[in-house]
Image 1 (tube, one colour):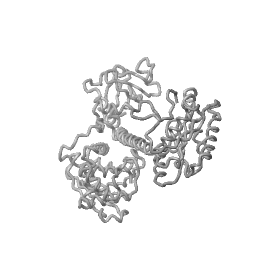
Image 2 (cartoon, each protein chain N blue to C red):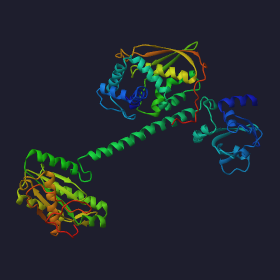
Image 3 (tube, chains in turn cyan, blue):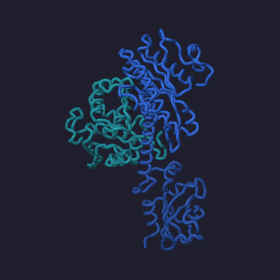
Image 4 (cartoon, each protein chain N blue to C red):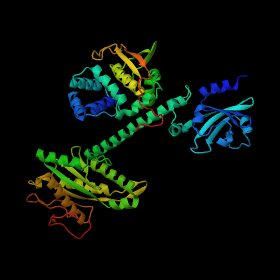
Length: 202
Length: 350
């Protein structure tokens, strides 16, 4: 798994639960005193062991934890750069949804060895969309749930989200797509957050 | 023929930074994004060449000259900010269309004019370019941090290393470990302390590269003249220590030392120029100093080396047997509280 993904998990744990919790989780995952480098590649088993240890430590399901991770990625100040990159997807929440088709290509354009699951958005009409997450990272759909929810806040949109498909805790069948049903109830529900094209995130 | 209003409407969406000009170069219509760059000065009615400096083509007598060439334009606003734009001019009956674009000045322009994605055509790659610039700088930032951390790790690894990077020999840390192990094992061993003579002259006259070359040659000779089980270490600039495993016989040690001095005295060539050095050697076999610790034995070898230096260089000395662990050490300048050994000759430069 790419270091950026692992590093995102690490930042999520330390920013949300504190560095002590991170140490406890890496100990439980038998990694010792460990920190990820964002630009190196790690064995998938390391990520797997870490997530399992973290969920066990919190006593929460993997789906919930991954959804929180997705929310964190868009809303926490220490990962503001990522939110900005996602906002380049478009002016409105609908534009943003459509930009998800290119998300893995966009990621690869910036970091050639970062392979995210392919995303496929279908318009079902009447403000309803389905987003299919391709294989590669079991549970990625739950992360997308968090991202979609937090980006709705960011754009000031009101949405309903439902996760269908393999449950992240079952894990084994990573060939079956996870599907997210998105219902856009109102695209201008709240003011949302400003996005200034020219203001580079620190 | 398409009506001007219709044409302007189409252009406003497809090319939001266009200008429609008449054949004398007076602006008739302007795209919304281009007008946004100068919100206080409506562009229609102004002369194109009054608003912009031409950077390409340079030599133009009048506006009509622009219509005869290939039509590629480079312009910059005459007033500040002097944003540079690239463009294309295409003649129309009675005038021309000029489409402008930021080119590489896009990044600054987006900041200077607070542009949003609505200011660009749906087909424009401007937003993708901004995305890439921002993504790449985030990635470069991560790589920068990674490089700094790797550099720090490298320094600390070097500090913990056992190898002298210049010669490939063991370093002082490694030698200390070897000596500690010797003491624990109880096996006999000898310490040979070697200091190069005239090395400083080589360094000073022929440069550091020559000095490094000499040190590497010395290392090679020391390794060739010792056995696999012996430890050869570079412990200072031009100081070396050999720990001989299970070898304390004076005649044998003397023969080895003499052969070393002999070989080290052969001039070494560096870029065709001879580098002449020699060596002074002090030797301390452990069996002659039964009560002395490895560190003490090393000090005795050092003292013997000191004697050899003062005996005129290119020579060797054995350490004098001492009754017990001595506090003696080479009378180094600036160290207080150390007693000079009885055999030391003072007043001479070592």
